[in-house]
Image (cartoon, rainbow, N blue to C red; front, side, top):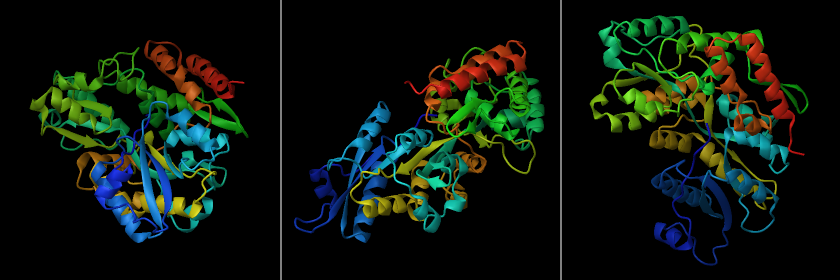
Length: 420
């Protein structure tokens, strides 16, 4: 899940003056430069945050600059090497991107602050783990989003399903029942590897593991990972999703909008696209967390989202950490979650989205969330993803163990290649 995040409110002197946030000349305030990603937060949210922060920190002024996701990796790497006044003091990065910046040696170690002041023990694992290396914390969780099951309430009621399933076995049974009504019980593309990852994690497996310091190996061939793939195969067979394509080919929102599909695994925001295509579905759609192996907890899911990092080359670490503390703290986490329908960075803040069905389902799943392996070379795996090819071959009847071993070998090769 590539990432998204922030937009800003007052990014130039004229805008800051209009917002009343620019300090008077000679006030002696230090400027903290913050890079946030486009669409991570609304303009109104950032206006409120800027005004509140500067009111509480009379010696600081915020200069929030909105960045585009396209090309952000190279731009951040360049910024981490710069020593000029325009270099950022705080940067929002995708949770799965932290590893590559740590590998370059450009991030500040925020372990002491996170352990002492920032409630590290309650962070969502899918945000915290990718930002942690050894016992050191470099990425501070900001917000999360993850997949849930979007479903047709009317089709569930028509076949007598009174409540969404809470176990994977019940999910299979309910999906078979939905098929009996003449509809497609679920639409699941054959190469939806993010969804597969959750099933593998549920079984105790992983996509890759660090065999020794800096050395990673693909692990799709393990018994646990094979069990996850087997469940995916059984679930995918209950629908008509293409086995040789992912969820974007064709876009699954359009497939669901045709009105004959009962379930879809996606982020809740996809409902907007579905309802724009088919307004007749408004009021008929609901959400539930991806079911787990037992009813004790939802299933594991891939957690996308953003972490906040502080470059080593900042000349104002106190100011930078003050910004991170505020953005990651309970007040503005709650505001962001309610404004943007994100999942807050702590399990203890899930109540902030309890009134939003889709966000509440995400929050329940996020408590079991994970992220892709924290190797700096993971992007090389996704660039020519062997997991997708592996899934298609298994769904077409090839031997899972053989194909898993071949895919794992390709993952291992990709993770060993540092482009040298």
